[in-house]
Amino acid sequence: MSDKKLKPLLVVEDNPGLQKQLKWSFEGYTVFIAGDRPSALEQLKAHRPPVVTLDLGLPPDPANATEGLSALREILEYAPHTKVIVVTGNDDRSTALEAISQGAYDFYQKPIEPEILSLIVDRAYALYELEQENRELQKHESASPLDGIVGSSKQMMKVCRLVEKVGPAEATSLVLGESGTGKELIAKALHNLSSRKNKPFVALNCAAIPENLLESELFGYEKGAFTGAVKQTPGKIEATDGGTFFLDEIGDMPMSLQAKMLRFLQERVVERIGGRASIPVDVRIICATHHNIQNLITEGLFREDLYFRISEIVIDLPALRDREGDKLLLAQTFLDTISAHNGKTFKGFTDNARAAIDSYSWPGNVREMENKIKRAVVLAEGKKITPDDLGFDEEEQSVSLDLRKERERVESELIMRALTIHDNNVSHAAAALGISRPSLYSLVKKLGLPEPGKQ
Image 1: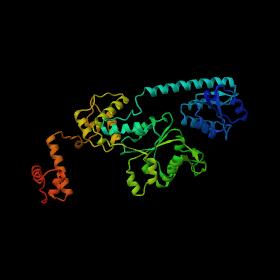
Image 2 (image 1 turned 45 degrees about the horizontal axis):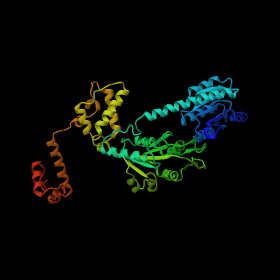
Image 3 (image 1 turned 90 degrees about the vertical axis):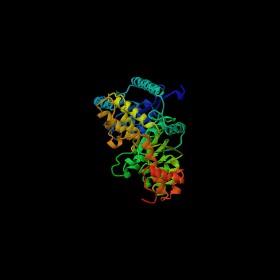
Image 4 (image 1 turned 90 degrees about the horizontal axis):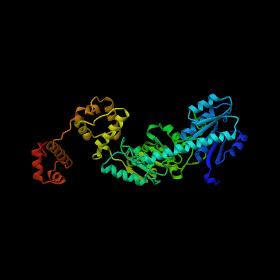
């Protein structure tokens, strides 16, 4: 049988005799051996076996199942679809049942009979392949990797076209936009459009983690590296190996850490705190921030060389207030989704609610809209959502649709702005407005504005 057709199987067993026996007991499999929890995780990341047999009695405490159960948790955390068959002592049925409750596929009690264990492994592998086929079918049946990105405005169409082009590439991307505009949604779309879509997508928010913890979260640490470091812990970047790492709010990353991040981006290796080994990591990086990075660079708060590394492709997300026609489309989408989740049905929004939604500036962007509609779904008593349900105050509800009044308001604002900018010089203000001096004087009188120079 060709090696290419052999299926990977990881056997975690610390007994050298059993290691040798099991190495050649599984026909049709390439068997990888690990003698303890750290090496088991290394083999898991290197070979990604669908099935693992795991002896719960592992060093440094082989008489108990503590280390084996820890290994089980870490295996399933890294590869949740893996079928783990735990191997226990003859009198340890309660521990085996605990392992099953924590996500193990099955258990087998010693002494080992390779023929029986092979049958359990074959059955586990068949189930994994069936589930994997089902997951692939579901992915193909889903519409688009851009699902969840709602918008028909020309601004969002431009963003979607850019995402579709950039997604399949390996370019490091920087997503810019105000808080609440959906930067992580764009990052996930880039991941789902890439060849890494079946590998991990891991996100970390630099602004949400204290500065003294951020380095260990990113790069991990060795046992004893600092007080409280009781075990070796890989960082989030290392755990994303093969997938996409989304570094949100990178503009809040401390300067002291930016140099280490730059080194990683240049060399694609991580070095855990307290460690000396350089660990290669294959990962795509997508960053995001709501800050103006150029201003941070000018203020000495962000490294320019790091900016150039993370901004091979820049995607600018527009604020909701600048997305022409998207407000009501988003509102209806949120209403349909949230009401379905809450077992409710509504006939849409009242006219006043639609007008308020369309005229409101949405400083919190899409996230604020989602929160307002969640509130409305919970509190609404009628069949249509009202402005009060959405939490709009009276001023936010008062929307003028009087064309003449609105035109006069806009004209007044523009004239006063032009006169202020040009220090009440009527000729200059009129030129800026694209009208003649007499027309400007006529408008000032018609709109009841203060005569220039006589305020």
